[in-house]
Image 1: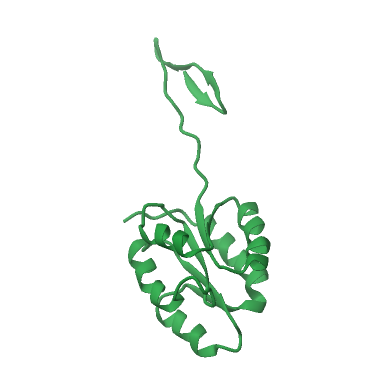
Image 2: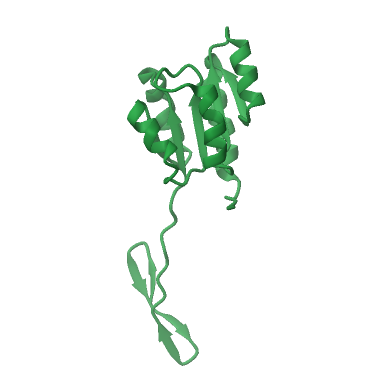
Amino acid sequence: MVRSRGHARKRSLGNHESAVPIMPEVPPTVALVTDDLLLFSRLEPLIADAGATVLPVRSRAAVATLLDGDTPLQALVLDLSAKHLVPLDAIHRLRVLFPSAPILAFGPHTDRETLEEAARRGCATVLPRSRAVRDLTQELLGVLRRPASFG
C-alpha cells in the first residue's frame, strides 16, 4: 500500500503487493528575525504564501533557541535593527550553524555602513528597510525554489 494524502492504495510489485509509506513533503522553514511587530505581521504571511513555515524569532529567548542550531532552515530573514540581538555579530554564527541557508537582511537606509558590513559578513541579500516587504519576497521565492543542499 502507498500512502498518499492520508489514503492508502496498493502498489503492485510483480506478483507481490507491499506497503510503502510515502512521507509527506515537509515545507521549508524560514526564520524571521525581527522585533518589529508591524513588519513581522507584513512579512509572515508573505513567507507563508511562498510555501514556507515561518519560525518567528522575536525575543532574546527565541534567538537563543535559534542559535542552538537544532532547526533545519532553508533561509533566514534578518532585521539588522533588531534590538533583541546584535545582528552583525550574529551573522557569523548563523553562517556557521546554517551554511546552506542564505541570510536575507534589511535595515535602515540611513545606516549604510551596517548594510555594507552585513553584505561583507555573508548576507546573500541586503536591502534598505523601505524595500524589505516588496523585494525580500521576490528574493525569498528564488531561494525557496532552489533545491536544498545538504552538507
